[in-house]
Image (cartoon, rainbow, N blue to C red; front, side, top):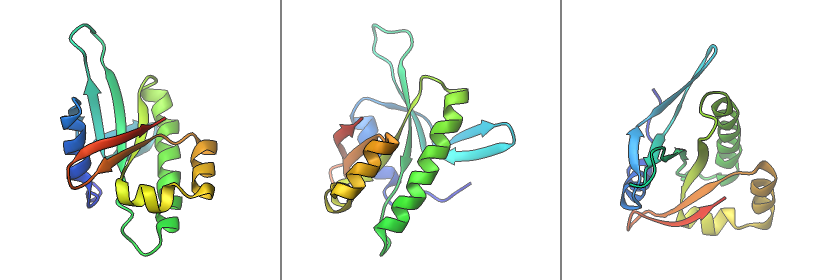
Length: 138
């Protein structure tokens, strides 16, 4: 099982504060001969609903000296997870959970925004100090 990212608990706590229930930490993605581990499976069921909304969150800290290298890795991981999840959890959306600082300093760059849009990457932007969700980007 892979190690947790530096900001794992901050993102997890932000989701809980936002009304999500963490169902799996980590969530095992099994398809055919492949077994991978996404960081979280979360559910939000409203009292009036029988079937709640479930999401998968892959958390990335982006603390190395090369945010671009981490982005390349995160992007590949996200696309692989999303592809396999289409076969096993068809209604579940996947999000990349990131901190506010890297969002502002890296993800808002025009070239990165273009890649995110083209690859249809969903983001959850978290204030890591307050452990609060700032943005959902679909």
